[in-house]
Every structure is written in structure tokens, then in C-alpha cells.
Image 1: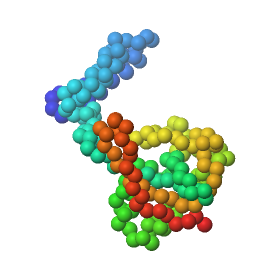
Image 2: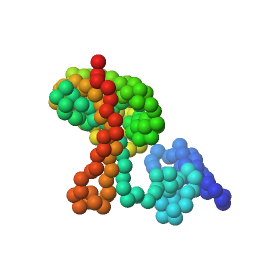
Image 3: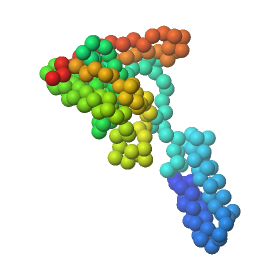
Image 4: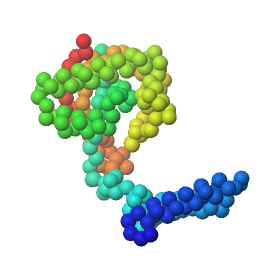
Length: 204
């Protein structure tokens, strides 16, 4: 039992042995406790050694040095009183919020002006429809499994959990902003720099 996957092999053997012993006992056995110890150790080993032991991983996919400047996209709904409102991420379902923001940052900007307006007209319809539904009953978990569904990889604030928190005037258009800030400067109270990159068509 050497080489790639050693932790997994030990994990499987410990699990099978614990399951076999449990079938022969009415009380938790030492083998079950040993299996839990193996599982904990296998999970901690990649963290301590910074080397993957498949399927236990250090998750290098999301490990990176933080940039000096952080960029993100923000979509704001604009109502008939020309007030801007943040939009609950669940309003875009079944579109993934994080993938939508990534699409707005690059592929959206490569579209023609006509196609940009068409795309934002579609998003405006979804945002306004979700706003109307949320005014009657707060936005719920969009997954068919409800609260049993897996959360998004990155958690986002649920802005429309209560009807009173939902804008009471229809959205007429959308504004797409690119925001940037320096984490170090923000720690000293510096403001986020927000640049308007596109405004969608009026809602019909």
C-alpha cells in the first residue's frame, strides 16, 4: 500500500473493517473509533503536508495570492423614481449568479450594442418578475430540493428574505457596474471605485 492513493486505501480498509465489526456488535467498537480517527487524519494530512492524497486534497484550485486590486461586477435595478437597488442573487435562477457575473465581465463586453441590450432585456425581465413575486412572498431557495439543496460555492447575501425588504416600485432598467478596490486601502476606509459600463433598455 504505497504510492498515490495510500490515504484512500487506508480509509477504505478502515471503513470496511469498522462496518464488519459493527455488524457483529451492539455497541460502538474500537474499530469504529479508529475509522473516525483515520478519516480525520486523512483529511488533515494534505493540509499539514500541502501535498494531495487523492481524494483528500489541499484544494489548490482555489488557492492563489490575493491581487492588489479586486474587481467584480454589480447589477443594479433602477426603478421609476431613478433609485438603484441591489438584486437578490436568487432572482437570476436557474442562471448561476457567479457564472453570470463572470459572463458580464468579459463575454458580454464583446457583444454588439444591440446584443447587449437584448441580453439585458432578458435579465431585466427575470429581475422584475422575481421582484413582483418577492413582494407577495419572500424569495425562497430556488433549488427544487429547497433548503436541502447544496449551497453555492461562494455564499451571497439573501437580500429579499422578507417582502418589506423588496423594492416596491418596478424596475425600468438595469445598470451594470465594474467595481474595484484595494483590500489594503479598504481596511483604511477607502471607498469602492464604481464605473458604469452599460445601462439596459427600458422595461416594457
